Image (tube, rainbow, N blue to C red; front, side, top):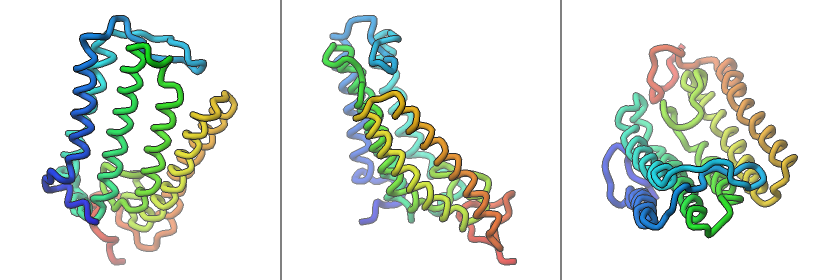
Length: 237
């Protein structure tokens, strides 16, 4: 089913996004009168609180950031020089937006729960939520079309449709694998496993950038790097 064109407003398309934003803001406003200061804000690797903050920091910053991100990502397609491509990747772009808002909701829920003493901290919740977001991104990255704001935007992916497509297929696998590792990190909770997983993820992301260059270099007919729009096809030799 088509997700609609992000360049045109659709209440049906935006309803899940708006519902999450409203839920985050409403939960924070409801909790505000009942939360005492200082509020736990940061936890070390052992799950111990090592950072405290005010009610505003715990209950105000995340809703404000969420509203800003929602508006920014809703507006970006209108100013992207590659905006002609958003209609064909509306579902993928919408999934990335929604997964990001879900992550913000999980983070805020974890902060509120800790503020009320319902939990000892985010624990496994946030790594698992980031892992789910990475899995979603891994599933849709290959469906993104060239643009300046979403996806793996290196000078070489923006200069070659071939590099863009191949790099995003690889990035999809890297992000999906990273998502599985993040969820596993939330379950295993061993320092060596966390370090090893982060190293593997870092190497995977670094290889994605290198790979984008290698594919571009082998492209016999790439779009020139300078002065092009990402929605334009490669120029004829």
